[in-house]
Image (cartoon, rainbow, N blue to C red; front, side, top):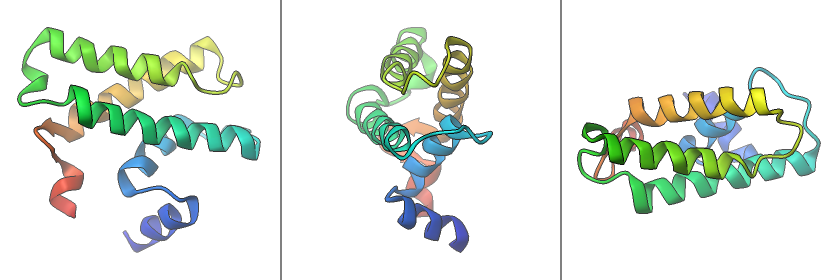
Length: 116
């Protein structure tokens, strides 16, 4: 895990942000430094919005709450650079939503909160 922590520090991202960043950028996408910065910003802001507004207690149990999280992911990822085609955008939305569903339990609980 130390290697990932070092990479996170060098990228200027937390472990959680790095996971989202990786989901968006892998397999390796050809991004300029500016585009890479935009992706980092999207990853940071998405996590911030989800934690603040969407990942409440038992969010995974109701269709409306799951849909609200999915919409938040889609809206934020729509800010990705245009190098992300509609097809790639859809794949990234699916991957990021799946990651959030599997790793965030609500009320501030996640695989990351237990690791900290």
